[in-house]
Length: 428
Image 1 (cartoon, rainbow, N blue to C red):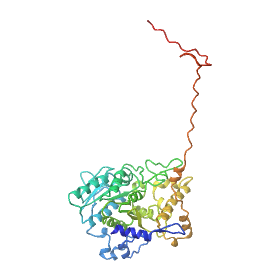
Image 2: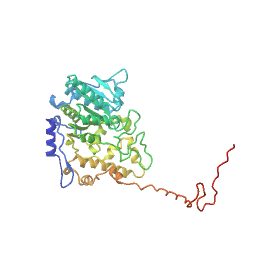
Image 3: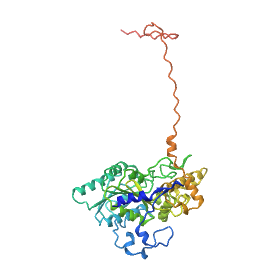
Image 4: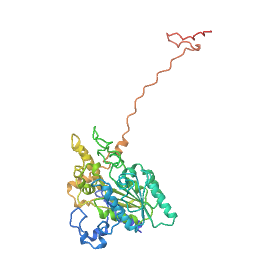
């Protein structure tokens, strides 16, 4: 039901403006949000006490599941701990507590299950770094063979175990349409092993393997993967992005994903104070700014087509998102900083245009002009692919020495002054 309805709504309401070329997308409609009056501008955190019980968030209930309970060893301000608790609690409620979680190696696994302890209150299994989706597929197949289809399976991992190491197994899970909800908690680097670059690390970001030195400091522009769009390319029933800054949106999308059967994917942005070099009290703020700048578009898709997006009331300049993070501190220093910031702003503007994240009529003229002029290739990926390097010059081969006609084997070449070497006589 959700699948067909979503496709129909997408076709009717998501279009491209013929005058501006900006994609016109339907705003994500969350029932709880429509029924509650929020008084804090730009936030959906206020309003539970004024709402009817049925519209309150799962996290506000004293009877919430607490799938990830206290006692774990996450860093102060850890976005992944928040995201996992929000998502798994919601999935547990929807599945009537009949749920199994498969967890990849990574921060979430390390801080939640230091042997022999665990902070999980649900059946939980640790897989290898790269085979989480395969293990989850096997668990789903096993439960189906045992006649227990009511027990639901979720898989979860970080961006390293999802976008890089585990991408092959995840693609197989998508292709087979296995009945698994896969949740990626994206903190944009391999944080557990020392903050190394991953396929989700943004351009110019400093990591242990992308140092801010040389003419192109930090992570390069022409690399990286958009995992949500890769999932959409598999045309699985449901794909969504979310952040820990919007609890109601995340709960809504997990609940909706659990209403489907088959492969589903949710990509959640979870800021990491340690790896991002930000204050621990800015985790939710940075997640919100990532959305409000357009650098991290929040949307949902069904059957490979975007059905709705989270609209931006007023785009925020990317500097407001970048400055609180020490991983971007180098781009505000020295020559060329304005060009780097402008290039990152172009990426955000391209996302706003591509996903239809704003209502253009409500924007100032200078902001409209900037978004309309956003390049189609802000990272330079395609320009780099079209640039053919000059061929490496090769030394022409030396001409073969000429041999005089009718010369005996071993005779000197024509025009050569050197005598032909003679064999050494045998000692016998």
